[in-house]
Image (cartoon, rainbow, N blue to C red; front, top):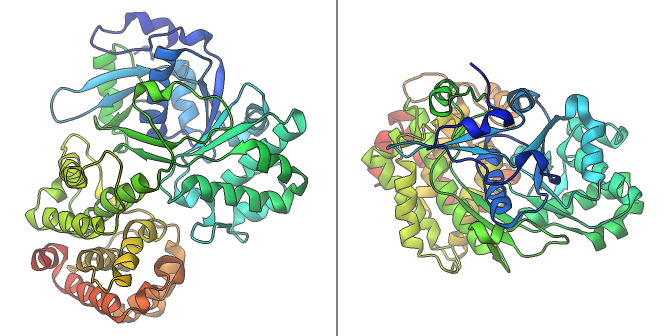
Length: 488
């Protein structure tokens, strides 16, 4: 079937929403590193809306750092793609035109660096995931021994890492004309703008120290909070796009109806009219970010490990189990006690809304997908609220259960002996540790609990440590379903 393209935009069926502006004449104003499904279903959608209401050359140059897949999906169809909004009822389809170019760093690095350097580019945004920064996030320090970072220190003219590509582009901009730039992190990290600011500055100290004054004076790093559940695209999504659009779309992404974007109002440049299309600009994103990380992301992780260890495929199927639903709500209520007031938000209603979102059967968000890279996610999602409660002398039974479920996941088997692949940025390290203690899972867990990078000082608390070990023993013996039911 003919693929989606600019020439067939006018021939889309009436129910399909499409860009309300001249897509072909749109100039580039944003470079985005990490053009995966989330960016295409979130920031690009807001940008598409903002162009429609406010105009401006805010086309996006989307960059893939590790794989040419996005380019192969989008370039042959004039970088158009559809978002399939699923809610369990009638799906809504929409074609997005904001992405105007898709590049792959593997063979288009020079062009990517030039795009960051050109004066027309006013924003560089990123969604590269926590592990994509190759950094110790807590210490805000690049992992200098990481293969990509080590390579870039030697060959910054041919960078491989996200930090290296960004710094190389900034240096080219500095040398070319030195116009201001806004670097906007959209990853799930606490104080993500501040973290990226420190990582870029520390990396720059090593490779281009002469650029530091310009970097301090002309480049802004606002923090942001993004929220939308965007599960992996399924094979039937591509097939269904042909029926919905009348044209084949190899770049289709699926998403829930809900979407939120909160941004610190600290830009060094102009920006699209995002404020007119639902984006909140605030003095500080910290209250929003803590709420999202500890309630949404924390409960998401609890459900992911609970369901995965019982062989349940999706988050929706997991939260439908009363014991797991109660445990997720218990964790949210527990973590909510560590939050500051969130302007304009009823936290109780937010929790109820989250359970409804998790239960959306059309999302198909797989438990194993959410379970990935727990070593990078748990410090912000679970350990941060535990630390707050420990300081007040309060236990965290639901967080202890969630941590214990993650530790069981690291074993690579569940209580029935069914094995699974451990998908984590540190899986090789965990596997070696597990092999040393193959017949003593409690010794393995005790060793992981000593990991300062994940747990900091929290496991120095005998209360928290013993709670986790007790829950781990229960899950290993009886499974997450029985353990969650006993906890509730």
